[in-house]
Length: 157
Image (cartoon, rainbow, N blue to C red; front, side):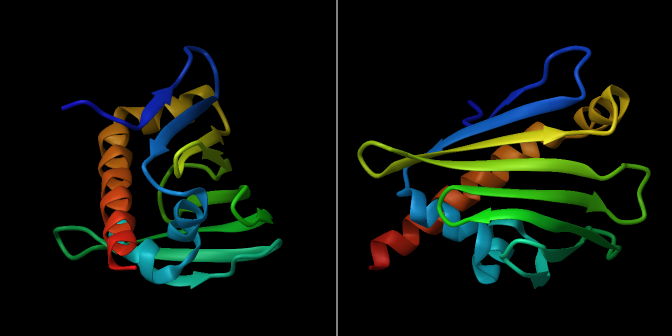
């Protein structure tokens, strides 16, 4: 199956760029990243905290198929509605170091939008370790859920 979410990971670099175009207006794409109820639905996670502001923070929790809980958290450094979120991301109690994420939301013609995520890792090895996981498939599936969820909300309006 074609993956609509594209990941550009150049050899020897400690970052990657993720892009995805959505059949959604930019304000609704942004809303899916900042409204706890929407985040929970498309990410399949519980939102424990989500402070959408400069110097705000967030904490999410997921439960794996074995009942183990995993938490993810970070600090929001820049928050510009419908344009940009700059934040850290950390998987608690794992060997993965904190990463820095730059999310940019772009309005496209015909009520479409584009998300560009530039993620910087502590090292090339840390980035490559993450890419060994089913990361690409997971983010593509999550973005597909986001598209479907928000499209359904659009149809309700």
